[in-house]
Image 1 (cartoon, rainbow, N blue to C red):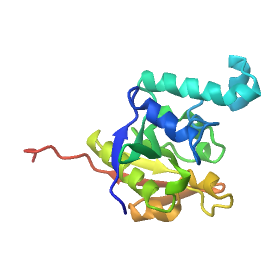
Image 2 (cartoon, one colour; image 1 turned 135 degrees about the horizontal axis):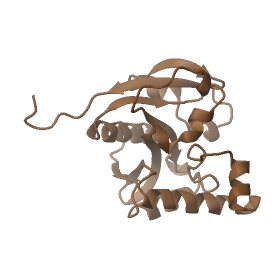
Image 3 (cartoon, one colour; image 1 turned 45 degrees about the horizontal axis):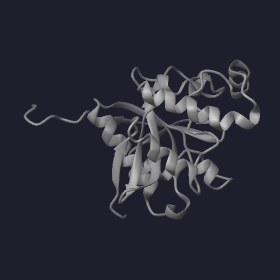
Image 4 (cartoon, one colour; image 1 turned 180 degrees about the vertical axis):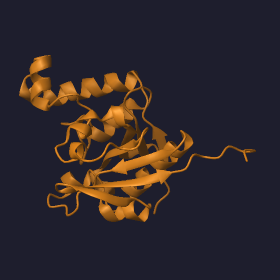
Length: 204
């Protein structure tokens, strides 16, 4: 694995997310809003009176607004100063669409204070080089530094559509990090792990 650096998503690093998402293999149509919506895409288009062709730009503006409000989080991966990867993570309320999922809502309620790892993006030229795994490590380290807790993810069990389904990570990638399968969610699987809080120096 190459040596990468990491930065949290903030208003200051938002331009780096835009640079990654607009590049080859990016995510310039969803802008990482799929799970962040309080309602379906169709209802949101109607509520905001957005034409279908303008929806990617609407998603970009909405996510940037959430970032400025401190309600959209994630980790950016850099090779030197170039953003090449992304992992979206956050508390449950940052990804309300997950709770509306027809499989998820049939399950027992998640642990209190659950963290969620929603998706990954890796620049096309940097795939198969451990970037997503590095992003996952960084996200878990950030969660640990923020007090830890239960973390869940939703990888596709048997990806059939290339990079589109790998956006959610892969089962082996999460298993290597100690995640365990909890339940099937259609084509995906719910996986969880308990992350311990980072112990401060001098603490006993």
